[in-house]
Length: 438
View 1 (cartoon, rainbow, N blue to C red):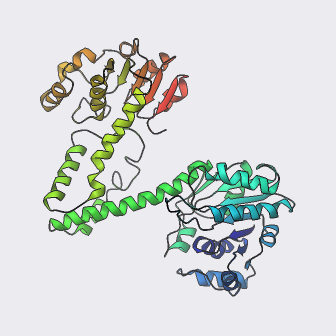
View 2: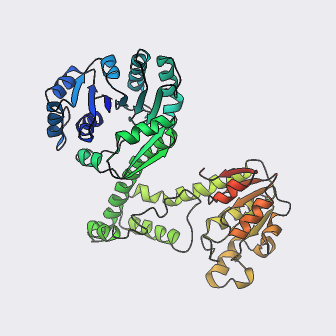
View 3: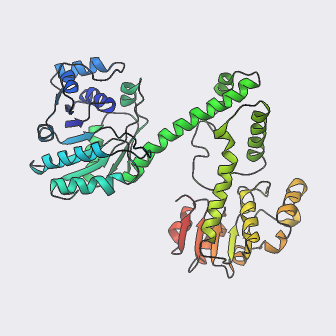
């Protein structure tokens, strides 16, 4: 393929170095004449291990050149990759002026060109930017709509400085958000031969994945540093603890718990978080990120309450009371906290949990419920249908298949607030459905 790369900074330079290895012909484009000259001299405008050799080889093989003229680059390529800078404004929103400018320039060049052209945005932008901002600018400049010999794609990059060449050739996945089918096909052909899954998704999701990855990386670093600081104060080597911690790939380093849903609870997580925070205070080690865990968890319960209460005090059916399905353990259950809040605010509440029977509650579990919801026996219903009788709002904390079937059968005319994300409920009901994070 013939590809033009707009912006010869870090990401653009790496693309110019690595795409020729996949067999493509590349034209680099930049307004800085020094960067254009360096590429044409076989030199990299950025410092990165292995990149100089790749650029020199590509230039020598006539697979890479650089220009300053937009029309030359667009007319000499089928695909245009945009990797210009998006620096922060004073309020921390990204400054997209450079993106806007290059989109207009590329669009004007496409307008005077025959054949199909694919425009690919790689710069980090907020969700919705490609469709809500870039698409109108591009279509106005080109004079035709996306889908009419024109594709618009968002393709995030996940290159780490210091290992970007390796990252380009060994991606865990390639995420492609396109506004038309042709855009997907072009990008899949462009990256053919690279390992990892080709993930087709919407532009909005692709934009969000890029943001979320970097935020998560930052959170992991802060977690390790705060934990390591407390451990050091206890006379331990935090590196050794984290080395063993990372060996658990079932729960710790895995997709476990990374599914948006309701708040955490139970007999372990709240207790251990409180214990670790107490240890940090005793050692006089400030850990602001970890110290906010419980407040964040509480705010998620507040979010669920606000969703339920949005239309005023209605009769509510709550499915699930234990902290997770398959158990009757209600200690520190966020669903108990939610139920208590609803009762305290004057909501009429009916509860169904197939595993919770008041007559079977013992020990600490019984003490907790007697303290938090002393009249639980009057609220618990024996059947899903009993809980659904006369309610206006159905709240699903967790529900087995039989309960979900009953919810779907009785959902007409009622709101559903789903805290767990049951696809069968969402797909099978015509009721007003809303998820806690979707």
